[in-house]
Image 1 (cartoon, one colour):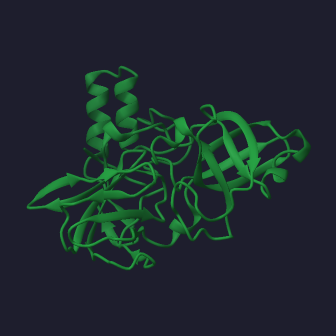
Image 2 (tube, one colour):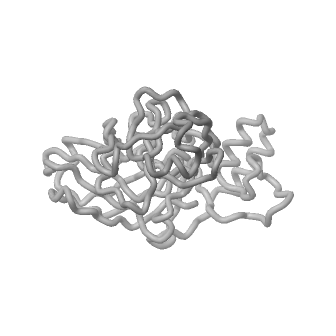
Image 3 (cartoon, helix red, strand yellow):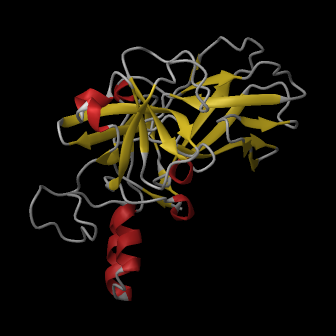
Length: 275
């Protein structure tokens, strides 16, 4: 794992070691340098620069790391597909994010990109012929092809004429707005006890790909279900130290998270992913 910085290392322009051209030098450039067959000296230079940096998080100075094995795609990757509309509503989506705030437009994502809940709760910037809106992934579209989205009925007219029904769209993952000034949080599933636990991570800036808890000095990965809960029979009574990894390989550690048997309670954490 490599330590990352969320702040630009140089001013915009011609930035040395910015291998992925995103305006900053961080651990993603180490990955890009390796993929671009940079020389050993070049790879060492960018690695040495990145190592040891720290960023400021909601919980104070926190050392963020990058797990290269978890990187799904570069930040800002644009996807294309077809957009349709449905009336699935704000309750009962496959991502089990109830209650979903009416402040969000909601969308169902095709089975391939949803990827067993990996993109549950993702915040998307969706563009059609009439404009662009931000949408929260709360449901799955089993019959859709890769790239396809099923927009909530009230949202579809904002990106395309309703009478067309099926239209070309493009979309990309963007930072969740409520994560800008609040930490990640947790919700436990109905039936949770110290003998069986279902836990869900919420308010994450980017989609979550892995959740682990600390047990006897070792990290134990918790199995994720397609309905967006991580479930275990071994976690015990808590409190827990969680290690959370997003789809960009960014890793945060959240300590002293209590167990709750109240499935309506939202428990705030102490940290948040960098931008």
